Amino acid sequence: MIADHSSAHRPLWAIAASAMVLIGACVALGLLIAPWIGLANLAFIFLLPVVVMAGRDGVRVGLATAAAATLAFNFFFVPPTWTLHVASLDNVLTLVMFALTALAVSQFSARLKAQAERAERLAADSSKLAQLSVDMSKLRDEEELAALLMRCLADWSGAHVQLIAGDTLENCSLRLSPMDHSAAQWALSHGEAAGRGAAVMAGADALFLPMDVGRDKRWLAQFWRGGMQAPVANDDLSLIIQAVARGGDALNRARVAQAQAEIEARAQQDAMREALLASISHDLRTPLTGIRAGLDALEPDTAGVLAATRAEATRLERMVTNLLDLARLKANALPHASEVIDLTDVIDAALEALPNAIADHPAHVFIAPDLPLVRSDAVLLHHMLINLIENACKYSPDGAAIALTARYEDGDVLLTVADRGAGFPAQMGRDLFSLFQRGTNADRMPGSGLGLAVVDGFARALGLSVTASNISEPEKTGAIFTIRFPASLALRDKAMP
Image 1: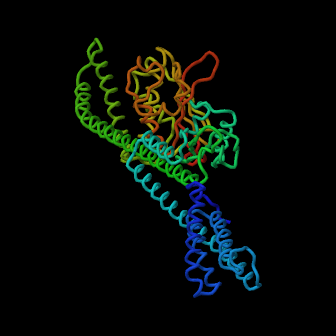
Image 2: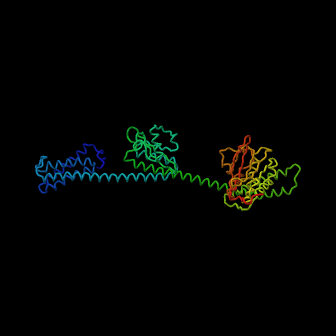
Image 3: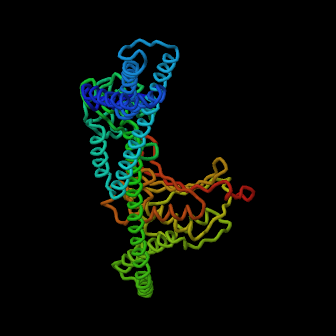
């Protein structure tokens, strides 16, 4: 049986009047032509009201019209006429066949009408969805997309519509009843509709439709109407679900586009910063070399002015070298060689390069007896250790010693530099090695936040790792920086005697 919705569009008296007029017209026509055609052929005339009424007002009206047409045909044309009595068996069969044919025609006409209405509805829904997609494609802002989607959903459903971000459901500004909150949680977790009008938790006041707006990220579309009526009619539910899905896709595209724009902007900023670093370091390197050479050619004065000036020039030269090394790292243009290295020589060379720093901060060096040789780049490793020693001296109190340790542990070689400063906030983590990142009390310390970034970049280039941790010994503070040589770079069979 085909569901009938058409008869609700016209009042019952108008439907009955239409049926009676059509049947009356068929009776009049039949009375005129009855002398010239047989009874069976005359019956076909009375199928016309059935076809018209079923096609216009649905199957129930068609069945009622078929019954009325059968009675009229029997009363006016089946002998004995002007009565509902049927005299012969042939006329009984004719009447039965007419009634069955009328019922079949009624069903068939109603089915065709329902299919036509469904096709029209699908076409209208497709047009609405296509227009929604076009409108959303013109927008890039997430809030504007959400506002457009809510307007369309409200217009198409006739309900109040609200979009709820899944991660804000617990703190949602909407006042949800316990049942509505449970339905929302279920829809959010299972990705299926829940609430009034759905198969799950139909006792809720609102209907919740899930909307995927990104990878592992889901929103909810809430529909509320009030009263006992479902927020979304069954005939509109398919359209609404498709619109919600397209809205989720559009919001996902907007989020991806925004993230891509942020990445591109950050890349442009990084490129400009790297170009600036490369330009500054390249332009300053030559005059600094000339200054150093001129200072070295002068005799030191008794007041130590030249020594202090030479130390500052050395520090400035090292800073410019760090800038240039960072620029090379970013451009993947940092040359490095692999050779067998004794870490004792590396530590000695680094300490000799920093006489002023270790003058105020004596270095305590411990080399494990079983320490093997390692394979790495001596020049880059030298720069890494200089930066770590300078950093340790900078953050240690005056006169406090720094500790350098090289040991063999679980197949890896560890080279550590420890200071006696205040340490660093635990939440900084790997950010400590970011460009221009500085530790505790950095505003009181000289420097630009380049040294640790250079150390981390060199370590990555050499296949090493560098980590930082705070000293956990009782009544002691400070930070420990560890360069780890993996077992593949440790020459265990060539350990030091």
